[in-house]
Length: 350
Image (cartoon, rainbow, N blue to C red; front, side, top):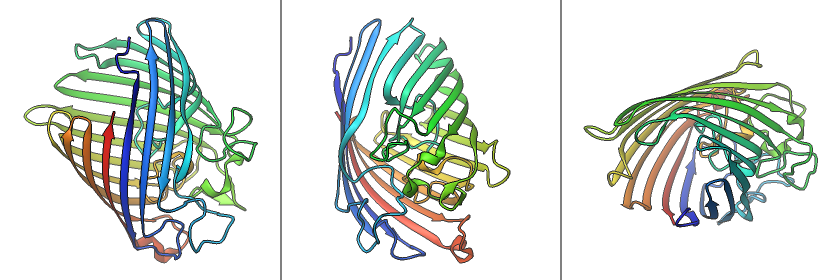
């Protein structure tokens, strides 16, 4: 039924970083990255399948950074900067027009911000989505979804040290409920719960800022995340996102807040501006799976401003500026140090 089964996206990024407190850092002062993600997806009335690749090439080798002793003990990225890997590989069945089930390696179905989940990471196992009702525009009025994932990270999170696997390793289980009201003026409320288990199998270099003893993660992670979105298309496109999260299994350092304001649209208009503020405690979530566009995944506070221009509905250019503090650093002086990042990105979908 799908008219264009081969789709994908392409990105070129130039990045500059400044304000490292401890030098040298595994992240270079500037770097260039090219990413291509072709996908082949088809769907009939009953069956559905997809397969896709993630192709990266960067000026820097983030697994062997310059002037950093090997083996690497810290990796801030959720991608291998010089790699070709499987991005998607799933089969699915439509039990009805409302209930869809997929098995394999697929995109995260929950509506999470980067505070909790990196948009470039996938789940590996199964997902189910039940749309209880839809509005006139096709957006869900109510939707329930669930996942079970194992061995899904780009880097090792399983017993087998050579990489991710469906064998024994980190497991992620979760459920989410969405409510939405309106069309031109719309309010969406999303509640999500994620439980991480067997975190001792995480590759040490991606354990990052979470509380550790002897290099091992010592806390449990059961994350409750609630996100409120308000969107209006008149008199001009605008969206407000407010996201709060808490790790219910941690005694402290367990809360996160994410707020964003978006003005304009690259679909309906040619320009969009976005501002994000976030304050994320050290153990609000498992740092290895949170968004890597921010320098730290947890334990930080900071700001991001973005201006984007659309050449066409499928082609855009982005200017992104960030300022962050590592508020939960073990080094007291670093907590007030501002780290700065500037990114230029050209994106195109096909």
